[in-house]
Length: 255
Length: 282
Image 1: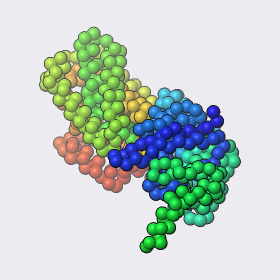
Image 2: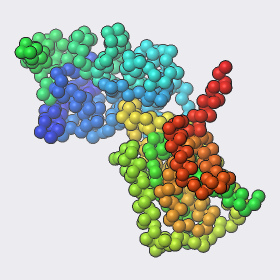
Image 3: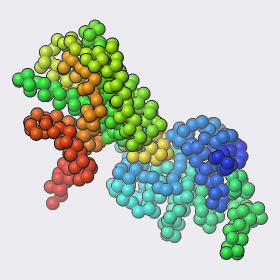
Image 4: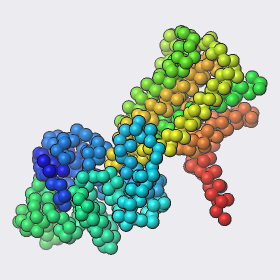
């Protein structure tokens, strides 16, 4: 099986709201998938399920064929999943370099006792410096992560995600809050990540950028997949158009 | 050395072990515990019972370590469920529970405590040396952990558990490890205390004592091993040196705690660092 990430009939209900109602899709190795949907479609809930922050009521989540539905986030990361947070969460009181070094040492930190027996960080420091250079953060290594501007913090999130040697990287709105220049730089970085053979799942509001860089689009609405395929073909589908753009347009027209 | 000096140095050694071990839990791993006295007490009672039972010092030390650690891991499980302020309140509860439980147990001597604990046979100076050796080992372990990947991961867990998880770090396992190691050392300190006084009552391990330990950690500089060592020694000596401090111990410690948190949240360690860096720059 070549699917790096596979969802089978995933569903979750919060009180009276069926937030996710049976979502299934498989992301193949090397794919570049955009996950979109109007506000309230269930994108964030679905990401939280994939990341292991929420347990679905039904359905399975698999990473490279292994069922991880019952695993916590940390265990999934060790299975090749990396994720970035929509709202940046660097370790503010650590240096930029240390933020990435910690990710690069995931083999030591996977178990407290193994972590206790290892001191040497030279290899991880070299690796972290390389990654920082790749995402355009070279020269900021010694700064405190909390002192970076937002655009650079967003890159630091990507750098940390790369440090854990992921098979698939889940980017939760990596462009949100960035100005035009910062956003296009960030898009470049993401494209480079994909060019290195890492599967990318991108959740993003910026439809223009998503259409430009994704190879495949999955559209969520009311907790269900209503479109899946080549971006232009999907957006041309009247059902998608209605749900995603149409409703908004009607709203505008009435206002 | 006079008997007085020996006893003061012994108490400093015990307080250093306690403060440094609390710093591993609260400083390195960010889990605020205000019940460290309970683990100290558990170790003291375990060592006292072992000494009364068989008189073996090594066995008493092992019993103290294990008892402290077992109780610590149990409380550590609570830290997986409750966080920050709620964890602090939970650990306060554990401390009261411990004292309340021990007071009512006939086999633990109840209100009267355990007296006539057999001597170690090392003499007062020998006991002091043993305490100082264990204190040195605790400091060395703390410095080692801080430099290791474990200390690195502790800091990550302390700052942001969610972000740590995205780097493959299992926060729960680290919190249990911090509690397990820190409370084992608190148990050890309890054992050494039982050897030193040969008489223990539950009151020595109450919540007020736990707060004093936390004051040592915060005033020394939360997370800094050497800062905490200096503060533990200094705050143990202060009431001995200054009569006023002894009479108003809680007032002085409480006042210092408030001043440090308000004016220098990094404690002595950060103050020292600031002065050192400032004089080096020009």
